[in-house]
Image (cartoon, rainbow, N blue to C red):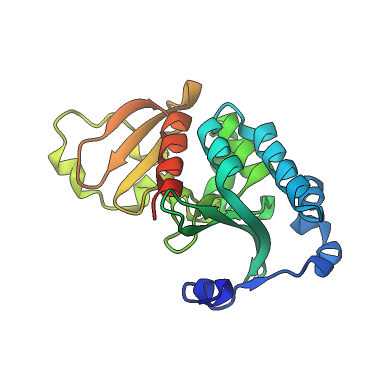
Length: 232
């Protein structure tokens, strides 16, 4: 099956953006930094520019993810789905399978209302990732195992959490101010309580297990993204 047919199994309206159309895209849809990466025609230099962009945003926070991409990224292409632009990454897994990851292009108009209201309280390193690199970065078929787009962030107060009745210890987060930025697709979240997120403090939250409090947001994200990238 060719790549586009595979992708269309999950989203019917997805298309690749031809290179010749890049310069016609309105600048509000694509930043200068991203345009510089995407219009590069030399394949090696193009990848170098991409890795440099990742390093400029999250070199410390996602060092293992960046290293894995540097070694195993086969190609990346601009895609469009229902008017939204994103970058499709083709990454080699440890078993030599090709995995497709999606990174939404930063677009401040995408911030849904609930995130707009609290965005200034979100740790700066997370702001920077979403505003300068990607509006989410995740496994394409499941839209999980990664940082999810702002419009799909999990506001904990909007969900019924059955695990609350089974907690061994008193709840250590405020549900009303807690947002899940990462999903593993199997009931695991990396969540940030905006009332208690100094130094990137986060909570590993599970729908069927005890939470782990006061973990480092980026340590967990970096580890889990690499686990996803290695797997097939």
